[in-house]
Amino acid sequence: LVQVIILRVIANYAEFGIQLNVTFSTIFGIILNLVLLFVILFIIKTTDELTKTTPNKLTQKELTACAKNKFLELLILLITIGLITLSVPILILFLKKFITIETVQITLETIAYLWAIIISLLFIFSSFSLILENSSPAMALKRSAKLFMRKPFETAAQLLVAAILFGIFLTVLASVANMSLGFITKQTDLLFNAELVRYFSPWWKSLIIDIFAYLGLPLLLIATSVRFNYLRKMDDLSFPRKRESI
Image 1 (spheres, rainbow, N blue to C red):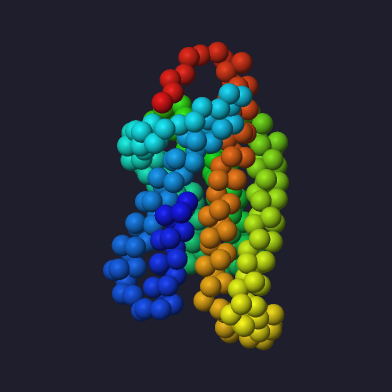
Image 2 (cartoon, rainbow, N blue to C red):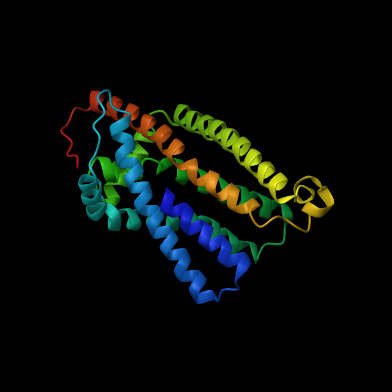
């Protein structure tokens, strides 16, 4: 995650220190997200090994080979999930232009939110299947939906609890870091004065929050990996079959 955090620091400095043009900002954003994809790929592959009964430390060569083989497919998979997730909200946004009844608009918005949540949960294991089971993007989507539907409510509840607990933990750490920097820079008024916070914020506040959000990524992937392996074992016991792995 170090390279991602460094890129985010540069982006933060550029945003607040130098006025960038749209082209440079777009290119920089693309680079940051591509690097983040590699990081996600590495973490998923490594996490799977760490959660095994007998962990196997992967070499840099093995991780690099996995990245080369699966990066493009992972990119295609995430783009596909994004398009599916946004399809209904975009359609509803279009329909709302022709509907003036407030109740109907609220109903459509609710449907859009529910669609996004359901699709995100159904396909939450797709990246794991793609990387760890050597699936194609299409097969990874089907595999994820199948595994999730084995125990949908239990899986959703466990992942939600994990996200909340990690979120609380990282929020506390981010708050401590922000308060510490506030005292060091003598800008505590921008942190504790409600009136000033409405209009001003220290340049490092959003950066600290972003950094701790990135640090929470491995925790969420570990929790998801544990659940994925549990459901995968259930599926293998029900329908034994040979699986090809990287």
